[in-house]
Amino acid sequence: MKKLSASIDFKSQSNRAVLLTVAVRKEIILSGLWTFDIRLGKKPLLPESKWKKICEHTEKGCDYTEIELHLTGDYRLQRSLLLNHKDKLLLLTDTLLGDEEPTAKALLSYQADFSLSPKLRAKTFTEAAEIEFRPAGQPGAPVARVMPLALPEWKAATPAGLVGGTLTESEGRLTLQHTTPGRSLFAPLLFDLDADRLNKRYTWRQLSIGENMQRAWEDQAVGYRIQIGQKQFLLYRSLTPQAIRTVLGHNLMDDFCFARFDPETGVEPLMVVELGE
Image (tube, rainbow, N blue to C red; front, side):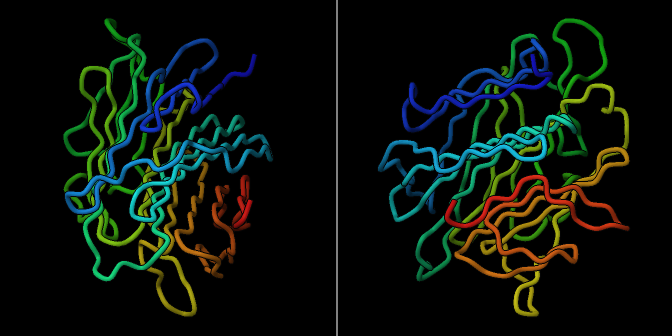
C-alpha cells in the first residue's frame, strides 16, 4: 500500500461539494465533504453544470487530478488535487476563473470547508496562519501541518498582494476564507504529511510574476515559494489565457507548475499542466 493516498469523488455528491479522503498509510487525515461558497459582492455564484474531470496526470512521483464546474456569471471553478509521494506533500486548490473582464472590479468572497478526521485535533496559533494536526485525546507530536499559501505566514503581516482571509478550525471542520478584488482568485492549501519533518523550519511567501517587463496582477497569475527543512518548492498558477511569464528566473507558458527549487541549480518541474490539457 502507498504511504500516502488521496481521492476525490465528484459524482456521488451534489454540485456544491465533492467527497475527499486523505490518508497517511491507514491513518485518515481528511474524510468528508469539501464544499465551497463563492460570492461576487453579495451575489452567490451558483453551479450551472456538473463537475467534469478535465485533467489527470502522473509525473515524477506526483499524481494530479483536476475537475471543473461552471458557475453563474460566466465563471468557472477548477478544483485540483496534487499528491507528491516522494516529498509527502498534498496540494489542494480551488481556482475561480472569470471568462470576461468585469466593467468594475467587485469583491470576490470565497469559502471552502473540509472535514477533519475525528481521530485528530487541530492546533491553531495566535500569530501564525498555519494549523497543525495532532492525535485527539492524548498528548503527542503533530502528524501533519497545513499552510494557506495565498495568505501571509504571520497574521499581523500586511496581506500578500490583494488577498485577505483566514484559515480556521471549529468542531472538526477546517475552513479557508479569501476575499479579493478582481475577476479571478487562487486558493491553495499545502499539507505537509511527513510527521518526522514537522519540527524543522518552514516558511512561505508570495512571489512577483513578470510579464512583458512588468509585474502581473494577482488576478492574472500567482506564484509561491515554500521552504520545508532543506527543501524548497515553487507553485505557479496562471489565471488568464496563454501568456509567457517569469518567476524565480524560470520562464513559463503553462497553466500550472509545481516544482522543486534550488538556489544553485534553479527550477526542476515536478508537475506541469499546459493550457488546453
